[in-house]
Image 1 (cartoon, rainbow, N blue to C red):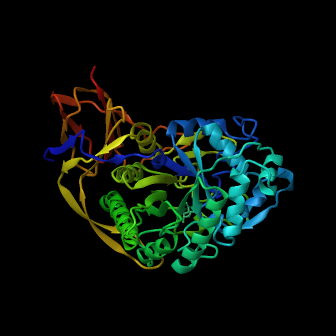
Image 2 (cartoon, rainbow, N blue to C red):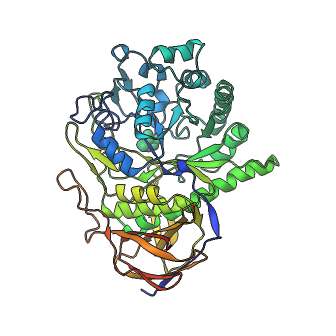
Image 3 (cartoon, rainbow, N blue to C red):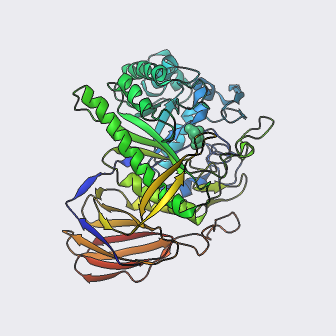
Length: 516
Ligand code: AHR
């Protein structure tokens, strides 16, 4: 392949990353909570029942904000079931995942887990089977200092100090027929606006995200955002987006191109939100919360992978085993989010443990990193700061990305540059990180980076994720089959002119620091 040039200027910036861009998600689903983060009998469990081996991997992964308790689960959830004496908590049927919810874990424990992991909590309220009243009661229970029945109930439960939860989601995927009490945009917009009003009256410091579309291929996409924001514009700070990338079509180039449709999705939602603002002559800008994103398809279509018979507790569902090619598509999605840091101010990898997750566990056994763990941990640890507008002169390829809507087959044409790239300068100006995916499956890619106005740089680290087998995976018994290794041959040709060669089908992180 010919040399691909990448031009960067330290003063040409897209935006600064928000801490919340690097979030993840814990749902009461399968073994995400039970056997994932929480397993009181486990040999590594602390006094709360939190698995310390999982916490260690979570710290390495470095998510910054954590969405909870769902997901589809939240649309049938009574938050009151999960607080108070554990022995008195009810067992209930969870109609989202056809399991039995024991409520042994609930909101207060989640807050404790977040404190232990040093992660900001993000709570979703049930706007499916419940509504504004239950939502504002939960805000009062969590955030009011004391002196009311609800806040004193929290104190009596053992949490004297208010939780101070700032970020709240107004329901989940309310446009989806699979959701308990799904709604039309008009119905949801009204309920979300009324819930938002009361929640903010209970605590004026909170920030709210209204539900956008649960995918770009939803039939109501576009009209949904427009109507929902017509109702909620004055009451919310965020509109949500969800995307699960797939390779149902077994077409790797198209799969790797799929994240470019996330770029399109983001830009479309920004346009719609700004159009709603323009109709109001408003200077307010609604920000985007991409609060579910990942690769997910093997355990999605087949009902047997999503539902186990007999209403089990914490069944092993949605336990997607990720390959190297999944990690490459996933890495491209990280870059898409990064390159929209001006408007995507929150995002959550769905999910954290066991359920379509970067971390896997065996109940009673060890925990290990899936392939997708690696791009996320490098992105979160080294991708914070000023995102730079890179001018990339890469050859492109044509792909047809398959994104079904129910039983309907939909194909989306994409022209994808072989090089997908994101560049971030640390806020102190002393480090520059490049994340790059070579989407060519068979050609090495020589790149020349022209970095202007950075002063003298030197290479601190160059690591690539690659495997000769695109379908290589990490497992309990072979947990390090796919992991980043040093990339050699990164050379400075002159000040600010750097050359490297990217292996076919690889994710690379190049980390430079100011030479003193
Ligand atoms: O993350 C798995 C599920 O995907 C979530 O519960 C739901 O919101 C989405 O459809």
